[in-house]
Length: 231
Image (cartoon, rainbow, N blue to C red; front, side, top):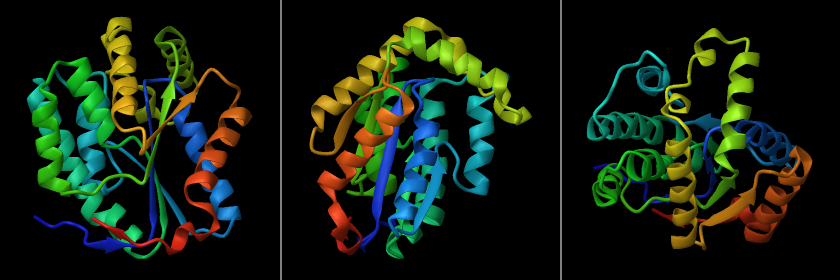
């Protein structure tokens, strides 16, 4: 198993249910941190590399099929391994900041809390592909799922990228599924408060962005790019 022994970059993940505004905040974070002089890359899960994006299409498209939760999790972790080895870890070794729209907490929430797959199995899979590596900071975007589903539907209708307009397989699972996701994400944040920060996603875009920047400054400050990590 390949693991990452040491790196000097910062890895930030954004998590939450559908329609919570993560993608917008990823763009704003990229702009703000780049303006501060950091070398920043933006990525997403599932996806982030050519091979992982192929798996994304299998799992997010409305006609992607009906997967057994364990099969789905294993596909996601195959994509995640590709993502780590070919994009995230090389960037962190170069001292870059990496911002990812979703990471392993989404597997815990969607396949675990949402689909009932054993969390111990999910965590074991993650240990196998990533060792002790974890995000330096995870933002959990919290929003009533009724609002999130409405926002997500509007976003899908507005996108001019055809393949993304039909990435609604999870939204089509309905309100109760989204309620399970919310419960799961909040439980994850409760279990790991040193890593996770809960964000009230009912705020306007600028207020959410400012909250993220304050948290980043509090945790890392201006010397953050020089921090060495042991994976």
